[in-house]
Image (cartoon, rainbow, N blue to C red):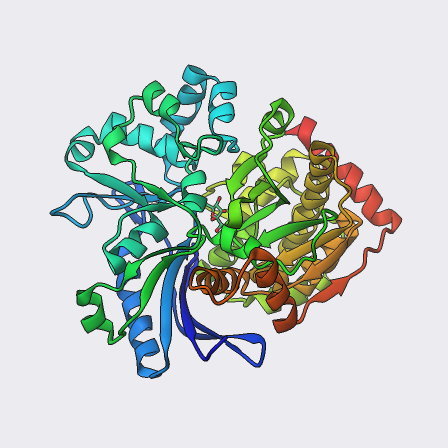
Amino acid sequence: MSEKYYVACDLGAESGRVILGNVTDGKLVLEELHRFPNSAARIQGSLRWNVLGIFEELKKGLRKVADRNVLVSSLSVDSWGVDYVLFNQNQPMLSLPYQYRDSRTEGTYEPAIKKAGREKIFNETGIQFMSINTLYHMIADVQENSDVLEVADQFLTIADYLNYLFSGVASNEVSLASTTQMYNPTTGNWSDELIREFSLPAKLFPPIVPSGTRLGPLTDELRSETGLQNVDVVATCSHDTGAAVAAVPAEAGDDWAYLSSGTWSLIGVELPQPLINEKARTENFTNEAGFGGTTRFLKNIVGLWLLQESRRSWIRQGQEYGYAELNQLADEAEPFRSLVDPNNAAFMSPSDMPTAIVDFCQKTGQPAPETPGQFTRCILESLSLLYGQTLDTLEGLTDRKITKLHIVGGGSQSTLLNQFAANATGRTVMAGPVEATAVGNVLIQAVALGDLDSLGSIRELVRKSFPIETYHPDSSAQWQEARQRFQQFESMT
Ligand code: LFR
């Protein structure tokens, strides 16, 4: 590969980044040129994303890229899943895009499932039931914002929308389309069945393109605004989790699972095709579209959200801790003092996370955490136990024997969580790369441009480029006992 550069614009719920990547001496090198905070805005009782602010920050990042004066071939945006923007020919945005945790789906989630039935929705989409899914937001729009839908030409999921602003080409890349719970992985298109069932406006649904599609050149307007010339916009895996899983440094074989660890924990295996059956439905697993026609068969469980929200709460009270410090305090805290079920609905969107954790502990007859170290330990131990439970279920569903867990993403920086994950799951944990999403984004661009040839070569390059830390399980009696304690939550709450 020549000295070509690719730009990944990676949008997470907590921050956005513009990252420059290139392959030098057979290794991928990433450099973060711009980072900005991201969070939902509360306005008149609702939760919205500031997508215009994100767009401006991405432009700032691209100007920094242009200042480097290197040969940039392409750029691509990836983002979290499910949220979307409505627009038409005259208006780039018709309403403030909702944040997936907005409470409006409280009125649509259960009724929609009741109306169509879980079987029908799951058979059509293979997607895990979660109130955050686009389907339930779209139904809320049909019920409450029909005036906006009437004038809208189209919707696009967040990363696809930004790729559209950059290229002028409006399409929905398949990995993000699949997170909506309105996409049918068997037909490879939107689910006509669900569109009919819920009277969704069919005119809004964009064309779907495969992961790694060259959309077109950066628009003239953006070329002059950013100073970047001759740059193609590529739809990589627009879904951050899809990009991250493409960058899992696993060898071929089916003895491994991945955990993409950030605000959410996405834990699963890669399958050659969707696994849509009754067991997968009752265990609430999901089939998301992955790079190269693969299926990400996984469970979406709450992740470091519990810690991120606790940290925000302490900051509100004037106590500012960094994640490294919290990990250190947790390491020194008493083991297994309090455990929670991170999946419990009480942790989805509480007004104060530490209070929600204390309430859970009181309800389940445990001592409540009191210090940030105790809270952090409780969260990390509980998450690890949930990983173990999920991997066991995954083995049963897929008939695979999973011996290795690859942890990628921001969460893989916590050596304490990595060791807990090994202990709680009884599997060897391999941690890294931390920047898996950006790595996947960049290397899928390389494939789209013909500079790399396959998912296998992406993973080989990741193995050569980044250090991977190994953690072996310590299956002491304490962890066995904790597993049993954890299992009891299902019947208690
Ligand atoms: C991770 C992620 C998950 C998705 C959640 C909400 O960043 O994309 O895959 O379920 O965010 O969109």
